Image (tube, rainbow, N blue to C red; front, side, top):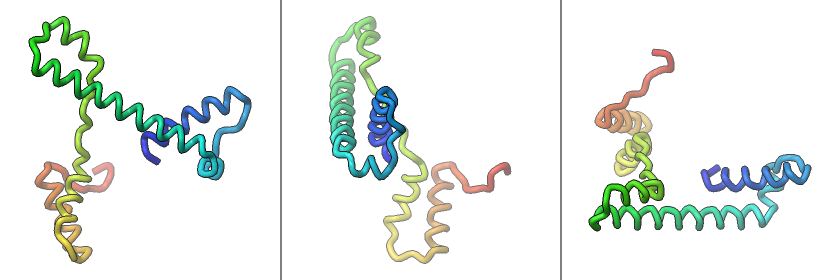
Amino acid sequence: MTDIEAKALALLNEVWKERGYPPEDKVRREDLPAHEALCRAIEQHEAFKQEVSDAVEKVIESCAVTSWGAAMLDPLIIPKPKPDPLVEAIEKCAAQMHLTSEDAANALRAALDAAGFEIREKGQ
């Protein structure tokens, strides 16, 4: 489930709870067009928030905004998410086609090692 779907489900469950209905289940969610519509609305809202954030960031960087002006605009800036190091390592390995499982594992270990990470058992 994506973040958008989780937000939509949380909103739907909140309304269902207010109305005295049980929490939404997967079957009902898949059959409910309102869930899909809500997901689309949330996606559009999140995209708009990111557009505003990017525009405000550009204004602060390119204009002579006073420090108090920048401080007032800072809450409108959404921090950029850090890239997932595991996804980056897998993307590097995915570029190498037709690997055996052992070669893929070795390539993944090398990519993780280059990023400063390692695979180990929990608690060790």
